[in-house]
Image (cartoon, rainbow, N blue to C red; front, top):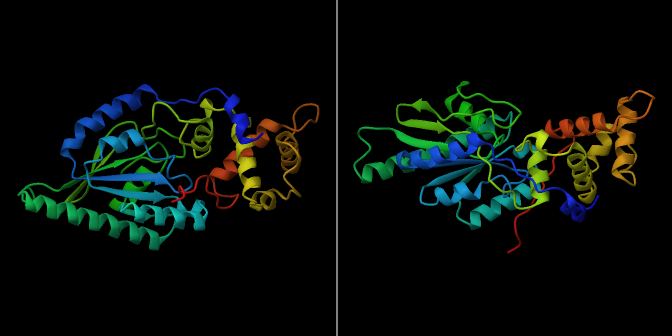
Length: 293
């Protein structure tokens, strides 16, 4: 399956009712907010930023957190960082299980909050209330995990599936700083099938919205196109095979996924491939690169 084949797929959309409600509530809360903290996935920062929310928060000071950098290609992440610097966009990179990254995260947020406090002082509002920040982003980009790191304890529920946070909740970081955790909000219409597949693989969209064979096929194509052989190494396979089905048959044989009649179970192979990718077992990969300037 090539990229052009994806145009034959049905249009992809996932915008349940609770997201529409959350989007309206977010707009109502913006007048209370001094700082917006936006979280995006480093493997596709452009696809995991909600442009509709971006339009709403354009007048607010923003800190962009590029999360899950340990799962993305480091060279491409550097290019994204250069792009954000050129845009004069305040940002910080973050990765899992790294005390150094956690320290950089806290410093970036502290500096942004300090600037917000200065602005409050200039208008005479600092004496009676803390800085209020809103944490926004698409589902499953890691908003609640970021909040828990900032608060240094588990205050926001986390999970590997999109839609864990359903309600807005205020979290007190300290006497000078409060966070509003918001549900992940998708865009109502996904611009392209390929974008939908990327969001599906990143678990931004629920699995039931997309076909497993489309997700696994696209993932295989991306690894092959990038010349990334870590997938082959993990499964002990010699090559990418001439077709998706042939690759899945090889994977099923290696993992012992067999259906009645001793045929390879391609569905189980698809599930295995997607789960291993999401757990970071197949190496670091980025799906998008910054636009050429």
